[in-house]
Length: 192
Ligand SMILES: Nc1nc2c(ncn2[C@@H]2O[C@H](COP(=O)(O)OP(=O)(O)O)[C@@H](O)[C@H]2O)c(=O)[nH]1
Ligand SMILES: Nc1ncnc2c1ncn2[C@@H]1O[C@H](COP(=O)(O)OP(=O)(O)O)[C@@H](O)[C@H]1O
Image 1: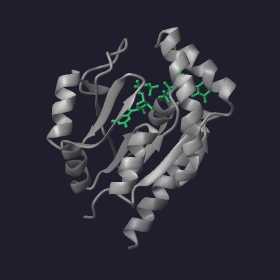
Image 2: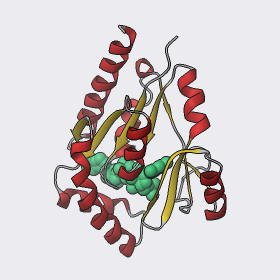
Image 3: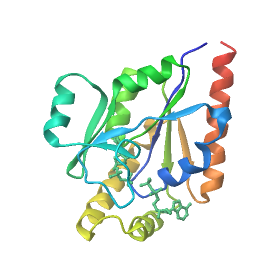
């Protein structure tokens, strides 16, 4: 059995990463495992600790950094987010294709550490549409929305660092494009 692939899914806040993931994560052919991140952000309504994120304190997050327990981490609009390394390793060793849904600074760290990671960036059809989506979600107060939108403009400059760019106009189509990318990489791996 070969080691699982490492897949990076990135893109600005509100572009639809979570929405698209729901379309393809139950596709058994993709053999995916979602890597649950650690964060110091407060849980939103309906978010479940240990499923959506491992919600933690800044102190515990700093400790995890110090102990080298994170594959990557970044500060994003006042909160820390990071990928627990041991879980990613365990899942890949089991042959699972591990999906990281992370922002651009963390993606850069993973690309440096794991050059064969498959990187996918999701872009919105327009910045106006992005603003509409992030507001429509009603998950953050106005000042946080402003900060996230300002950040999005800079994140879009990172597009050339990614292997694949997928526009999320229609989420089902975007999910199908991502499925195609992953399935082709699985095939390439099997033929190695
Ligand atoms: N570097 C890094 N970014 C993460 C991680 N987990 C989530 N993120 C990203 O952090 C950003 C903010 O996440 P969140 O507050 O959940 O907002 P949302 O993605 O807009 O729903 C998003 O771009 C996430 O993809 C992680 O483990 N590492
Ligand atoms: N293709 C799309 N067209 C219209 N609305 C979308 C589309 N994709 C996602 N959305 C909506 O945009 C908002 C942000 O999507 P979400 O998946 O939470 O983004 P992210 O995980 O990238 O922050 C949600 O309210 C979602 O329902």
